[in-house]
Length: 315
Image 1 (cartoon, rainbow, N blue to C red):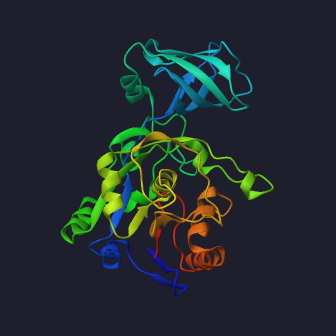
Image 2 (cartoon, one colour):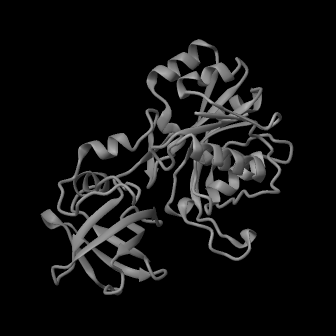
């Protein structure tokens, strides 16, 4: 764990188990309890060709989803995709080059269908052979220990560092923990390709903050957001005075340098790719120059990047 002090402009290489040393009793950790669903599916067209799909979000119907398809060039509206056991799906609308709306006919409840046919939507740099049997361990490992509410197609990765023992230590030291939910979507990790940063459009993601959680956040001292998903949720539901309001909804907030934070005081996050909206967010929080120097140090010290990589605590 790299500890970055914004006031001093300093960096320190520590270990994640030392996190409680940087927190005080009136601090409140805000964690995202969204659970990754087995959103990756593989079926066959009538020709026998394999079609891979990634579930993105439900439409108004539980059985109808926005999905990414691969390969997408040889499918069209009306194409039927079959799965083992008699389940099937039909493409009913084209949204973009790779995004489609598909209606599923699972022959059972949809959760059971996913459990049987779906697999963990692992990041693309984690390779699995197409013919390899589904691993029951992938989905378990690609979850936080506090994952509870199903709906994400990618893990809120800053939370992967926590263990039950770490949470117990924080509790014993009187450091509070509040749970919010933001279901992580595919768009969170898309690179910024627009000429001007402000023109980048974020995909909407569903969130929920309970009344109990909102009250706990509003009573707390310093707010320590675990991960960019927690930051985006908190900043989306707060008013001009930094008061957090409970409720359900969706957010497409894009936080980049120049943004004035209303709620978050400290951040625990992983290391992100430079051209991503996630990197823009941490630059907004800590400053571009400081973050560039922190990343240069991380590279020199051989910190690990990506979902299962090391983390950074920004004070």
